[in-house]
Length: 275
Image (cartoon, rainbow, N blue to C red; front, side, top):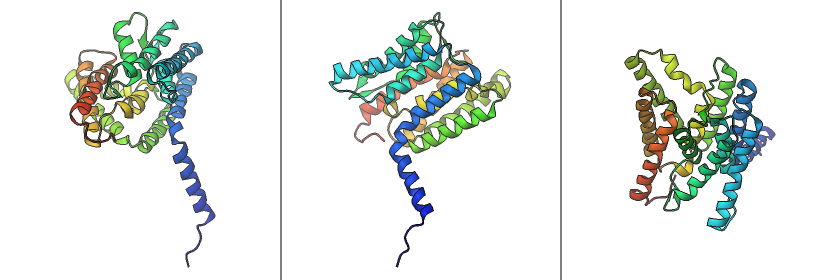
């Protein structure tokens, strides 16, 4: 006769079930943690109004376009993440860039589509577009966590758990490994210290890039192998852009590689469901 599960076992099962049911809220909580930690530790926001404007614009644009074009109300979790990403990633003394970038980011999901899929990661599209076309009005976030190992360790630990649960850990690890490889190549070619080439990984900008932009399921290609190849190519293009002193190399690299790979995947390899 089998014994009934112990109380501790039942508690673990209950926690696991609760975690699985509520995991969909983890990305929003995580990006909010990055925002709070980054701002109170290093002041990454120019003002609270900028983040409010960015999030409000993203949500309002999502509500409007989903209702007008799709005749339904869409879940706003993605819009919230996009708005916070924009609020963190760009810096401006004016409010309008936050509104415009958030709106354009959401609009890209409805404009640049193929076979009912959007091609760009929304915040990557909006931020890249603004940094490239209106650099006179905005700059990108350049804050690093520095020697604050506690903040960086907490962010990385939470991020790795979330992408693991989302079955995107291989994407993050492939990109990080590729970045480290190309950082080492730059030290050989340019004679720069390895730490200076590696240091971008310690900043809030790269936390958003690594855990949100490159792992965004709707804009990822299908299957593990191609996903790893795409982020390796993103790191490769970023390498060449950095060699030519492009400050916002990771954004531009994903802007160039990601949609191209997604389009190829949908056009020639669309026989299977996306994983």
